Image (tube, rainbow, N blue to C red):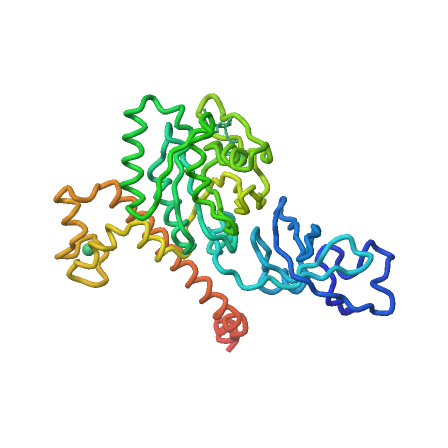
Length: 363
Ligand SMILES: Nc1nc2c(ncn2[C@@H]2O[C@H](COP(=O)(O)OP(=O)(O)OP(=O)(O)O)[C@@H](O)[C@H]2O)c(=O)[nH]1
Ligand SMILES: [Mg+2]
Ligand SMILES: [Zn+2]
């Protein structure tokens, strides 16, 4: 098989630019430049090079083949821009400072990185339809990134009344813990957006997550000061969003901060989440320190401080139940990953082993 030129991409399969156009005549040297993935449109990265130029890019075969790496929004990459080639080729994805990672919903036990190299995660939920169980999960994933975390309660104008809004805010504050700022805003009240803007410092990048229809793009438009993102009404019957935002994009704001308006994701399966669980459930983690057994699972063990707190009414049974559910989810996944690793290691040996039963039958 003919060697694929090092600069070539997965799509053209080694043919260079459009078929028939040879690669740079005389083996012209290819310059590797640094860039950042600023948009991901249905899998295609758009890379901003150091000189500001924007180029569509494809992954080098070497990247996609082995570890099946794919650049995500926020990735720092090294790209080559071959002459006569209409796209840049991503040769390398530089080490990520932090990632937002969920379990790949289409795989049994693989991670899926959704964004990289940001400073803050803002979780958005509508105040008129808060889902506390989903918020817990979102917070675990947000904390697991290691970045700063904040919650924005959107659609304040749709709250039944002030009392209801205050009660939801209280519940969310209690759930998020004392270290997570909880901001309440409404697209109908531009002043309320200023508190969110104040959390977006120049030079930092914030990832905005939340289910479809909660108002992420509406918030981004208010922050940007123009309609940079499309928005769409939620469905009438069930109030669900229509998955309007489909591409991930870094949006620069007038003050020099940047924000990623994430499409509303359906599945938020946990990947590695021990740190995130301890941070999002710091109250339970603190109680667990007092359990008699270090590896207490807070089930039937004697001297369990967590169950004692539930029985004493100090810890809500729902919160304890969701903690247990999320812990179980990470355990099941860990087990699956170990099985997958074992299969990878053992399968070649099993395949090579002589088929004993047959040879015995022949004897
Ligand atoms: N009343 C009211 N409606 C809002 C507010 N914020 C957003 N909306 C409306 O909610 C609908 C959904 O808003 P989007 O900004 O498109 O929601 P999204 O979170 O970006 O949704 P996806 O892109 O699907 O993930 C739109 O009709 C918005 O006008 C708000 O504060 N008050
Ligand atoms: Mg949107
Ligand atoms: Zn315990």
